[in-house]
Length: 80
Image (cartoon, rainbow, N blue to C red; front, side, top):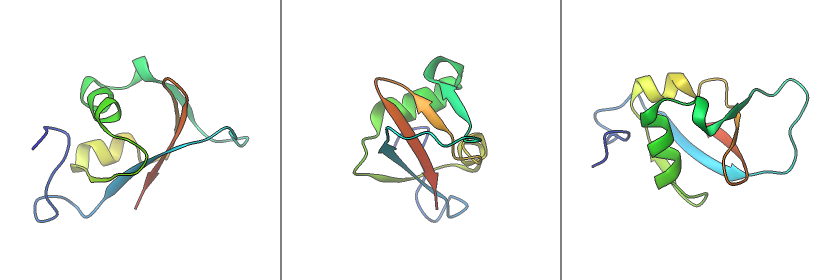
């Protein structure tokens, strides 16, 4: 199991999903990949848009504002 993810029993019940987007609404936070923590960068690099990933509370907090991340494309981060 990766450092960035957790089983449902160990986490706070938050899951992360990445979704490619071309629309960035006014007021939506935008971050560049290199502004993220090393752990968040690793998570984004290892996760594709078809996967929901259980995340640790500290990673959920880093993405709590559901930003758009500029990576190879714009990725909308969604927490559930």
